[in-house]
Image 1 (spheres, rainbow, N blue to C red):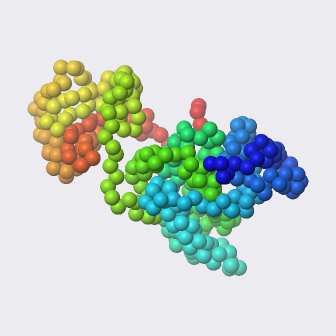
Image 2 (image 1 turned 180 degrees about the vertical axis):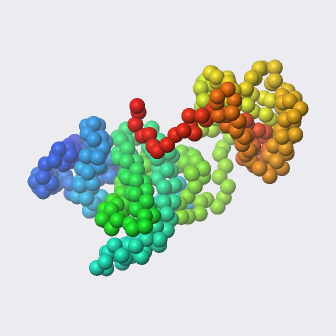
Image 3 (image 1 turned 90 degrees about the vertical axis):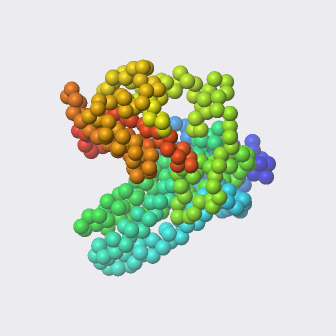
Length: 400
């Protein structure tokens, strides 16, 4: 990574002072004149370090984002000289960059509709006329959230483990949330009988600002550093994990992605694919869920049940290995067999019932269990008291 490092002790300290001055509200023109030489020599590594330091100040994330946006506008030209990272075809970064290209095309297409609205004297009337097509395009653009989810849940965690100055990703994640908020407000506005042109103008500007600059920052700053610190095996793992989230606007890898076989038990930990836990922790996890869980294998034999603090139906270890049909009264056996039959034949994958018992409203759900090849491996029964859940209204975003 030495090609990015340029007089670290000198210029980088100046750049940090410049960035903190912007965050503190000092005039940008004065700051630029004071640190002109350092700004001209900024590198992708410098940017990541600077943003990391700004986040460490503990200032409000909104203030940090405003400062970062101002700083990166000034850094745009010197950073652009480094060029985009070169990636191998069909790699994890290749697909992320393909998604970015498709998003830019679609946002350019949407811009045509937006211009058509604001070119008219009667902007409100023109928005009314075009609201359905604009809404349709916005709904299509929301597929890009798969791209952001892959960054947040796959790329960012590995970057945080492997690069010390990693707090920049929290700023990028916040901008993802800004885009999500804009989509929601824009679509809600366009669903009104008479959309507000002022609200539309404000939110559509925010949307473009929350997406297009982030694409530049990904490809010119984040990806080049990631490519230097992440090895091939991890890139392969990320591509494999991305299959679960999916791809925005593009087809994913044509070939089937298969994970390497790994040792399932090591140092007392069981490899669950998405994490390693001890048997004690697995039991604690299942027993602290607010549900009763019972697993019946492909031979219709009970193999497991959880022990939550309060149960809805009696269970004892004596039922382990017992045929599930023998765990129900004769009147229920036909229903049990029908569920099993539809799951085994693939006619259904889920079935739900609900009953009222002892003042509680109990939801009972059955889920077919299948392996990666789709072969039936049994049933999971999940029972939950949803009395309070049924009464929920509106939203709760803060702790009481």
